[in-house]
Image (cartoon, rainbow over all chains, first blue to last red; front, side, top):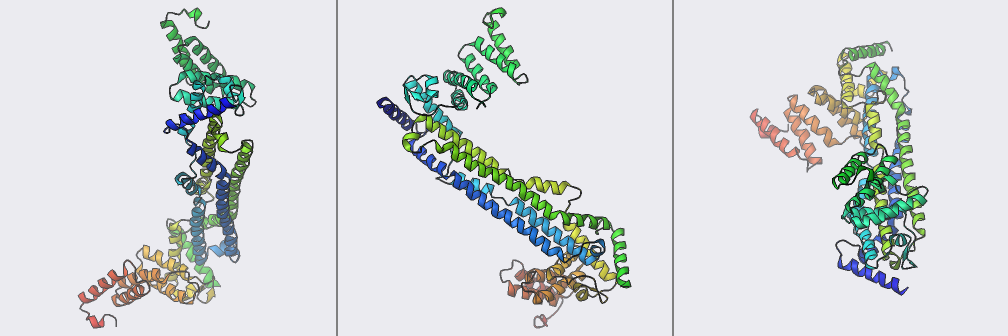
Length: 264
Length: 264
């Protein structure tokens, strides 16, 4: 366990010197509280909404009571006073109904959460920070992607295995910072994992698109072409696949590769 | 009953020759259907909202299940893989929660009602049409406002008595078409009726403002002044009362009335 212990300390150190990007200990403590509060938050929202719906139910009852004494037939309502009364009642009923229907508490709850200090949910940047934390750990200790994805750091299990979607997300975060080396590693791992998942947690076509572009950026145009052809095979209506195949072929031709060698 | 019968026929005739403003028989038939459908409409909205809240309840359960296997303490989350996983889960949780909270069905219901042929609630114009129908009936048969407000047409009871608020609304509709003669009659009736109501269905200050202006328009500046002073007495912070008192005093002075005679 000594190695793991130092790995984590090393990781924390990295976190602390890159406070603007990575997740700090204080952030993680805050997130634990956020996570703990989720059920309470939802239940409180549900309770408020139930109160609103109960008011609408009362409206049905009140409405029926109001009208029981008015026998509904054309002789009664064509009497101008009753016609006026019915129209007035319906005009007000609709105003009240509209107001009660529109008065839902979603924005209020969302604002409360967004503006509170303790209830701030992490954003995409935080997810990027956490993913890049994993990449730094991987680099620092030269960890194998497949082992890390299985939750192992130098033969010590530190977590449950990651899903294909977890690997896809790490790869996507690497892609977003133009780190195509890690994009390739983690998209490759995601492709392996979806074969074993049922149902798969990520779509093969999504993974392949990032994978092919990272291959191209890592100067492996032939494999980029093959990955894109696979994408075109499983998703024939894909908006970019056919154009990219043509583009990779042109790149290979420009490099002097013979057409018969493109896919070898 | 013969008289009433002819009154109603007369009223229907007036309705039909003024189809653009008054409430037609076809409109009244439609409104009866609208009225009958209100409880069903509300119940269907409540059912849709209950489904949405049930989904949010499932979210709490699913969320708890997802996390039961992760022992929450700082040693666990400072492990970079677990930190990533927690942040990913919270990021997605918030997106899903926001979407489920915002996805209420009020606009959908309101649009359905507004765009459907059978479910059109009456608008303020329809209420104006119905009120003006009463005024025409009153003129045609020279009916006393107080008797009509009690539901009587020439000693025949045709409806329950009107509330002060009903009278106020009829007066307000008359005011909107610059019919100050009827404004005065119905606001006067509304003032009488609130004295007997507990709680009052209309605010004295609201009635007095229309009443005073109608008096002024009917060339009774002294009574307009008295009504506005009463308004100022019961509502000392009223935004227009003091200015109007001054204005009525100036009118009286311009007419050559002595200050000592203003309130006599």
